Image (cartoon, rainbow, N blue to C red; front, top):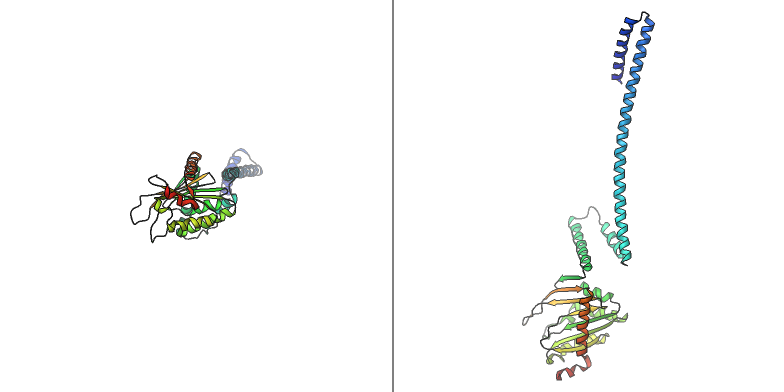
Amino acid sequence: MLRKVIITSVVGGCAYLLATLVLDSLAAQLIVAAGVGAVSLMVQFLIGFERRLAAVEDGQHGQTATLQRAVRQGFAKVSAATQLLARLEAAESKNNAIGRLVGQAAAIEPGASPLLVKFVETEMNRMTEFLHSVEHQELTYDGEDREWLLGLTCNAASSIDAISLCTVDADKPGFWAQPLGLDYLAAQQVAIQRGVRIRRLFVVHGPEHVDDRSLRMVYESQASVGIEVRVLNVTDMPLADFAVFDDVVSYEVVSGPRFAGADPVILCTRLVFRPDDVSRQMERFRDFWQRARPYGQSRALNDS
């Protein structure tokens, strides 16, 4: 404002000096000086107003651009989430389970321990890798699995067909006497109660093992809960433990060489979903099942 007053005064003074050279009347000279000063002041106000208006427009353009970017990003996120939900619904996935997973992950407090946060991220990454492997129809777990075996048993709807290799070791509890084996047997009993047919083929090496007392206890415990049990005596035929659930998932245990006096080492556990591989496993099971004898007739195997 002070600058405008100074400029107006200077312009008015210059106009008064020029008017004294041209006009003789003092009143006319003052009128000219005042008019020129007023015009000068008006021009300054107009220039300032235009500058402020331009600054406001520039600010509005910047805010509009920022708002547009935010809206686009928001719609992009909504679109991605909508597409994901649509894919899940199309795949008939358990949206409630996924919703609980996301909700529990979001419920972690921002101030939680860095170790806890990293641990949760590791577990979620592991689940992501699990789902990625499911998409490629094969999963591998190093060592002996627990959760896959029990989870498949608890969710089987129609059938479980399994081949189990038997080893006879005095003073050593077998798989079926261990916690995992007991939990597995209990889960199978529940599955049978809801209508699942379970067939288990026990494979022994040598006729002297067919009627081994410890193995007979295993056969009887399986048969007592409703499992169809058969026993097959083989010599050098290579076989591996596996189970096929609902004719669509093959659960396979890969064991390493067994040394004298030591338990067999489980190298890895595999889940296979490829239809051709599952069909081959089912053909193997049906072939060996036809060759085997029901548990009550197992003594006849000693003569074969």
